Length: 242
Image 1: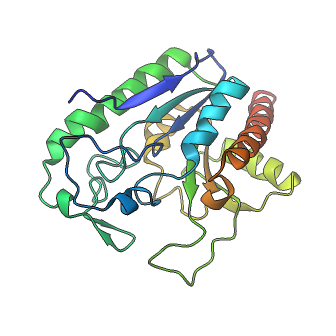
Image 2: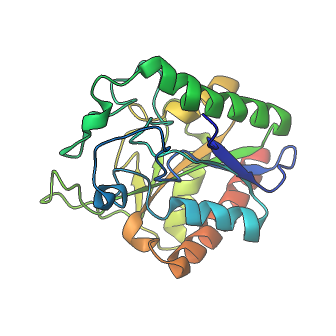
């Protein structure tokens, strides 16, 4: 396996703000045949649409060093625990992934998941950030549940540690943003990366879900990166003054 598992942008400042993006890419390594169409790889099931663009702008325009996955979550989901049933999805949002049926779980863990998280461990240990941003996006509707609207512009997810999330929700709301509290997913169920790299170390974090129709284009990505960078800076200041 020679293809990159992740990439970093910028230099992390000790005690500063960093960003991670687990679902940045829809890349499928050449040695893996998922048996899905090219159209499926452009859908949200393959990656978090717009999330990479927001994360890249946080790094390049706002000085927030970033680490981004380079492997589609259809290959292996970096935002799942190793034992999770959804780690290598056989179906997702009603779409069958035939190439994952009978996949070599240990090989994919060794090739992709473990190197990604080992690198993140090292990166964060060296940076000792004052705040971690985990950048994701979500669909306005699930294909499997088209009648259910998801009206939030941004959602803040958390498990046990809601210190940063509470400040962020208040600050986003003050800017007129429609904010979801543990929406559209609950961080008590889906918080693997931040559970491991933030909560387990006592590091404050904001796991941010952005509705993807707001960030499909560069203009939206730039706008939301600026909003998030502003809020993140004020969240970090609020945490430091408690």
